[in-house]
Length: 153
Image (cartoon, rainbow, N blue to C red):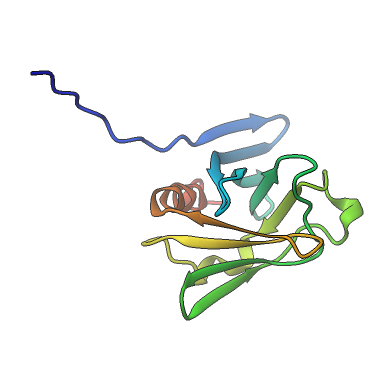
């Protein structure tokens, strides 16, 4: 008889120091939407010198498959009765890194977020397209850890 013991996955939070005075904490996950399309979820906290940190979520889909509509908020459903709108970083489509990239400012909504279950991210896409990503609690816990890092700023 052969027993296999599997260790639980641990958080992979990357810390980067970028000269002269930028500190970056980030989590990069690849997760699938309801149609099984892969998306890259990059949650990060950036601290520039003595400035207040920025806390953002960048969503990246395959090029030519989806295009984000800017400026539109990301909708997060925390449960059946509670949704949160996360502000779009890009004021227009021209400001975005690429059409398949959305980036959202989590700083204004941190107080209203819960991480004990899962979130449904409703992505604001062009041409009536829709995509929903169900983010599980263990990824949310990793994001929460990033939010709390280096809080003496």
